[in-house]
Length: 526
Image 1 (cartoon, rainbow, N blue to C red):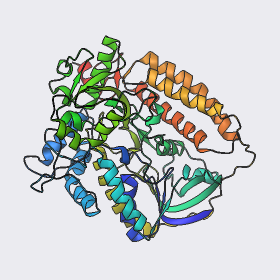
Image 2: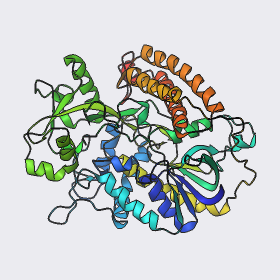
Image 3: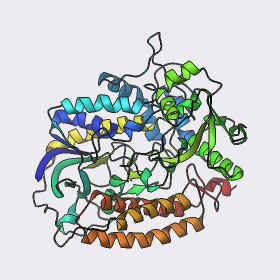
Image 4: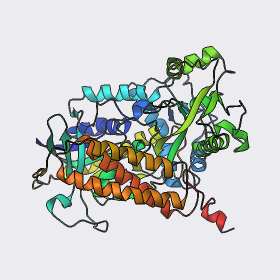
């Protein structure tokens, strides 16, 4: 199949859907998603979306909280524009049908989470992302200008490279003309030409053994841009959510939202001792990087596989009402959170780095935008403030739509793009070659490139990954393509970027903690 569209969107979470709904008023949209359209990271976002709405909260307070959480590495201008646009983006989501919890008075029931100085988190019980996804997907499915291709896997964005032109990272005019998209059911590879393309492909949590991300989070967009010689940055900053449910064998790990700590739950050791006050004056409500490292340290000190989150002192009716999903999940494995502590462990959760974009979500590649977790906007710096990610997606997809609408009429299709050439490839009948390499990548990253790192661990990880990369690249070139081998290839690209950028940062900062460089650069110069 070969088709032309005005706007090509890859990804069906809040970033992709909100952008698609806006640009669809100005042209036809093809939205490609690798699973069913509802299966996104947005769907699994429990806590909520942060925005300033009521006094005593102010934009300046939210800006300051974001800068502190990002270890002052966030871009101040990006933080400012994101927070100042937060209220309008929330109102827009409400207009589109998202229903956030309210108090009896009719005011929105805003939650408090770690790192926030005020109650500003809009939520729908403990499954906010699911509610946002429901509302946006319903509108998109009803829109006559939006076509959704479910269960289609995007292989690569199309650039001059596919016209046999030399492209390298110094090429000034790399241009995106669309993407090659695999239909796994028919094994046909479609050529979809788009005047403008948006990547909203989410994160890459599956590069680790333990992650809260859905199985589709394999870093596809980041890897595609890297292979196309686009700019990628800050990949060393990976947020490990401090509290995923400790339930060995379950993938993805079930998230125990930070909002539960905001509600009053407390972290404890196996001896039922509170420990967070030893690490930070904010206790269990410290930013995620601090809490995750503290839990990691307590587990090492005690020789245990997890710590506990204690809710037993909280009102049981209120607990069940506000966190019904968590209550039901824990009960399904025999834990009554009103009477028993919840076993928790850190899990890979969110990539703060990714495809480098400007204030309008434009990448270093022409006619290509990126929004959501796959993008590095400058908002998060060295660590993401809780519930700022859904906000970031809404803000930057909005800004991308403004810029894209402005330019789409002056753009033209590149008609001499060749179709995908699969000549000489054969069906790989030994799936073990892919699945074993997949497991090895996850084990290497979890063992050597986790919450705490060192130069020796990073070097060892890189040496081992290089072998797997060569084997996978050779297999990829010879094989009829499947989603699994393409995901493995993408994960290897992502793992390489994480390690190389971690090796380049000769300091500990935010989510990157090195045993060899335990201080900030400025601290080392004191």
